Structure formats: structure tokens, C-alpha cells
Length: 120
Ligand code: SF4
Image (cartoon, rainbow, N blue to C red; front, side, top):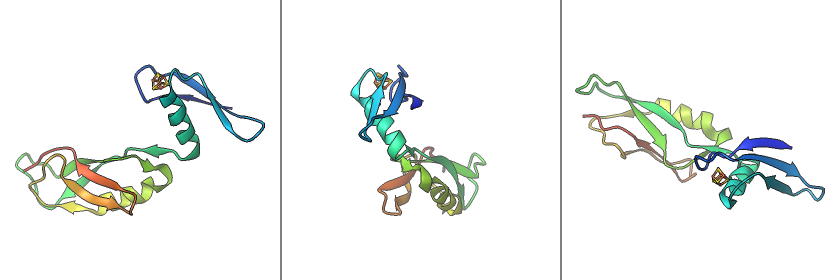
């Protein structure tokens, strides 16, 4: 058995995931279907939205040296270290607008890395 708090909405249902005799997983404690979907994904293939910062090739007007970025979709957890390495190797020229794609379609995962702040 594994315990998990659902983070899909602010209710935060405490859930339990159990192995049944036939090898299937059962989820209890969730108040809606989204909790079960989240719990099963968390057990089978956990993913996270990744946030980080990217270097600028020059210093912006507000003395900013790095800009914050995030992935547009959750990334498989085991791939996060490789994604972070690529993010930290990346350098971006000014100007950058919030929403600009900094890394497109990372490793064919359909994951874009976008700026979350405008800097000029
Ligand atoms: S199970 Fe449903 S109601 Fe409960 S926290 Fe998750 S999304 Fe919200």
C-alpha cells in the first residue's frame, strides 16, 4: 500500500493505492476520477512540470542575468536531470518575452521550455 495526497485540486484528498491479488492497482480516498488518474500515473510514470532559469547572453535593462523558464507539459521524472542539463547549457539573447519558446520539442517528448518573464 502507498499513501498519496492528490494535488490535482485544492481539496487535497488523502488516497491509498493498493495492489490487488490479480496485480491491478486500486485507488481509494479520491473524491473524483481525476484523483485516481493522478494516483495511477504517479505510481506508473511520475511526471513533473520543471522550472529553472536560463542564462542571458547580455545583461538586460534591469540588470537581469537569467530568466525564469518552465516546461509546457510535465516531464517524466527520470528525464528531469537531462532536461535541466540542457536548460542550464542554453543561452538566450534579448529581448525575451514571457511565453517565448526557449527549447522546442525537447528530445521528441513534446515538451517545450518557455520563458515566464519578459526581459528587454
Ligand atoms: S481526488 Fe478529485 S476532489 Fe480530491 S483532490 Fe483530487 S481532484 Fe480534487
